Image (tube, rainbow, N blue to C red; front, side, top):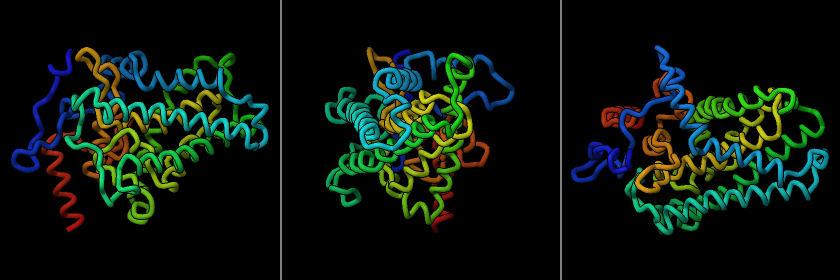
Length: 337
């Protein structure tokens, strides 16, 4: 089905003549069908197919992790001790990946505007000449925090895990001995990350932590690719800590690579600000998640993502409808006077 055929009607105006969104998916948005009752096997299979068997971010990141491990990863024997050489190699690799993905998407969508505003959630462009951001420009501010802090913590977590594998401090899982569990674990990593993200995200919205750290990320109401990893160093430390599950559950360095790419490059794609890349009038690669776009607009909703229905279970789910938006505005009025 073509993009133009699926364009929804504009959401209810916030003010006369001003639509809520430039574009949004069909409403209400839904969570993963794996947590609904009664079970719907057709929806479950479709969800898995869209996530893993079509051209998808999941699949691209897994293939990227395998390629990195096979061709440009320092051997584990080399990582038995912390040395500048192999750590610098990983740091440079991660920086190049960051510029390739975030920079590439920014050039495509925002610099050269190859897609115009087709499938763009927010009407507005990225902020310029604003005192809200370092360098008075949203993109430069986001690039600074993503690269200086984000890539540093990304590299530190990877280096720590590789060092632990090399010194047999954490359990190792080989493809040859456990091929089925090897694959299943790849599927479970986004599920675990979703659960971890919900709870640490709620923690980051605790007022002292929000003011100290998370407010920096939330300056980005109208997000772009560089916004995804634009965080305070304390938030990077907390957010990326979900990778420490590999210190408990037996896994392979490929799992760590995929996990870290999911947390970093996945954050880049999910904050693209566009629902996906359109080729020949079809959305060929799903990118930005409207579920999380709603969080950046309304702040106190959708703390998790669509893989796990934590928000629905704990009453913080925003389904994108005008009625939900009004409930959220009323809630904020009551909370903030």
